[in-house]
Length: 313
Figure: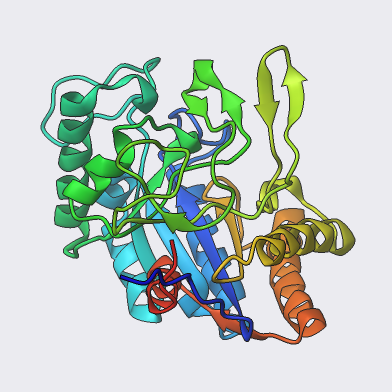
């Protein structure tokens, strides 16, 4: 059989943005976060995207505990057109009806195949029961994963995910992504670092291309999250460099993919992070215009579907 190289789409720039909805007082949440702030974050970001007619680009990715506590809020967002995903943080997770938390210190990267599959299945079921909807999208809190994670997600019926953080290396925090494939790809059942044969489609965020050592043995990359409060020039430079790297690699699709969290009051129009969200939207449009591309609001599923149409790896 003659090989078929992946085709490339050089007419569209896909734009995807999500809110990482974490449980107050758990690892990864904000120190001053409350349930009220968590709701204000969701409503404020939805307002930003609705005003720009971009709700289809917006996702709310909630931990099971958050879905259980705020189900009506996320159902409302789904009716407005936002996509939904399970975001999972195993540290401190207590499923409904359980008598104790999962270990607060042990990251998902330290779980073996059987226990990891069991806990993700529990979280998926709890999330789906809480919201009354199925999910095919998964996010790993703090990029915590190991080589079991992608095949487990595929076995459990997930189709799209954001798990990796190429370039981030902090083993103590469960983040071992040195050398990972830098852009979207089908995941591998053999290694978390390479493209593979699974239908599961991994969508890393846009981020700086060169890791920097922030402490001995710990390497980080920066991304477009609102918490950085980047101005237009800084955000544009990061996004442009990321997309330019995709183009140099002949990557099948081009995209801007960015996050924020439910840890701040996004209903406050004067909040610098709200402006940072608006700046990323402006950057996506400006970058599409500079490259002569059509900006396409997209969910993770949309990007996966387009990649498959192109025969992407």
